[in-house]
Length: 46
Image (cartoon, rainbow, N blue to C red):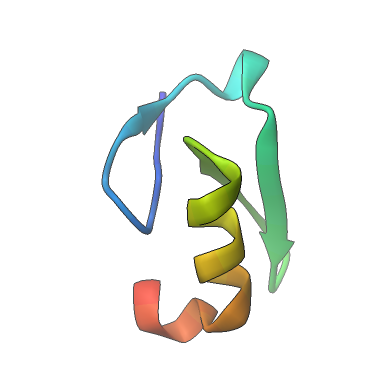
């Protein structure tokens, strides 16, 4: 399980619908909204 860096929710990597890569690391999100927030300002959530 991965942790959504925006909301902290646990996300199963094997069936995650919302992912993005940042500086060589894949991040997993619970929803499109969290993914979009992360992509606007990744450093805020890391």
